[in-house]
Image (cartoon, rainbow, N blue to C red; front, side, top):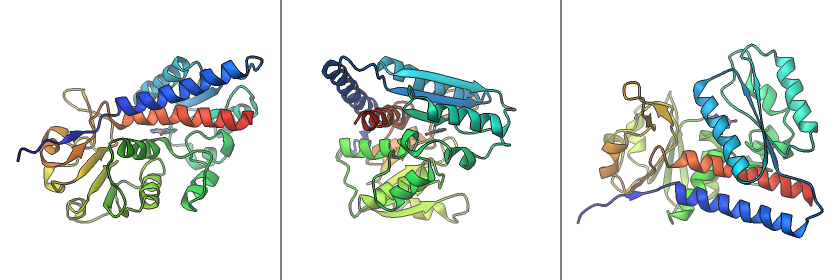
Length: 291
Ligand code: GUN
């Protein structure tokens, strides 16, 4: 039998989610013409990390395409802690803003956790506030679920990938991806293993995965030797190839494609899902506030 791997493209799924948000927003405007409220997303970037620059611009562009209010706050790399806190507190108090996103990474002198807990949980579109992460861990409903893991789950659902009873292996233990990803897969009844930089013999574990989510941050890290032929491979990485300058994921796509059952491309996979989930979270915050 000829093995034809399934390409898990993010675009149709992300476009459908954005279209759903847009139609709900248009319906809101039609039903409440007297309301001047507009969903607002504020993105804060500290320093000038070139990748962050691209992501932040993209988030603002998609927000504008939906007809949302969008603002970007660019602060210099040497911004003191107090100034960043003041910026976030002003956004908390701003009634035009329903979602506040602090783009990571931050410069080394600023600890993300000190700021993530300052953004109001109901304006936290990343789902990184300890209250939101705690509700996720408790199996309750947070105001927002972290965008990338939420996007992975939506993508898997769209392509009818079964999760219950499967062995899901997550590579990476960040608060942004690995930890919430593990929780969402666990809630969907997978048996979850989270691996990280200190995991020995990592390929022995990845080779057991039915679902393999790679968020290790190393370009083209996953090789065919770490993949079983029935695996569904989800690549969360976005890296610039050192020589070609092309965007590549954490999976060696060309090499892994022929040996797996299904795989997400980079670009065109999870990155699109993350942005669409961010818009969905912003919209939901807006709706909750109107109620
Ligand atoms: N940097 C990379 N991914 C993310 C994300 O999902 N949210 C934020 N705030 N920063 C990021």
